[in-house]
Length: 278
Picture 1: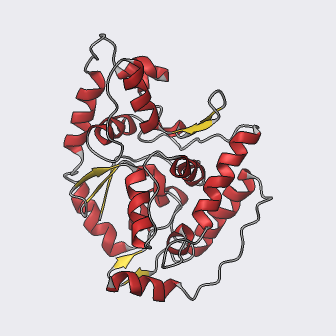
Picture 2: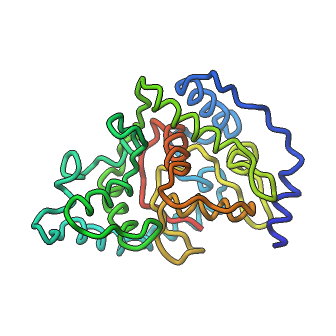
Picture 3: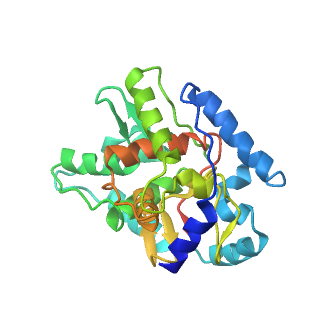
């Protein structure tokens, strides 16, 4: 409770300029990247994929020590086994994805013009299960995070490549995610941008706020606070709770659109997931 009040006191005095809705995604990306490279001029662009560890030397040293024996290694192995274990009909997850599901994470999420919605990797993992007569997995952690971690691992080093097609519905989804990122909500009246753009690198008590640029490159992520692996929608829900806002459901349209915008803002950065964070 005290920590939340401190966050509100720290950030509540900010006046955020309204975002120009007329800007194209390309213009948004250029401005977003310019903001962070100006704020942190000594950080190489690709290093933003390392989150707060790109902007704080002491935190980076601790993180590099953890990465010598990554806590998510077992999750990758579990995910690989699950990915390759046949369904009851004899097929595997590979039958549902381009390139057999290997090295494709950099293209997610994407806008599916046929269904008129944003498709995330986790959404398609469960769609694959249902297509093959299996029950869907829970969204936030467990098997779905393990499978996603394995698939992300096969894309390490590939650059984020989210596409916004020339389609009114795709632009609407993008703008919805953008609005979510900048809109204030909850009893503490805070937005994603308040913490992770305008106050990136600043301290809130013992924590340093991570830059939003590069946020999506390392998911799913093993968080020490969780004691396990979780999806990005699990993280979105936790952030909403911290500002005293009732979270949307994982894989809701709201969170899928947010992930669409959020990931597009890291286009060009190399994937390094799964990752480990505090």
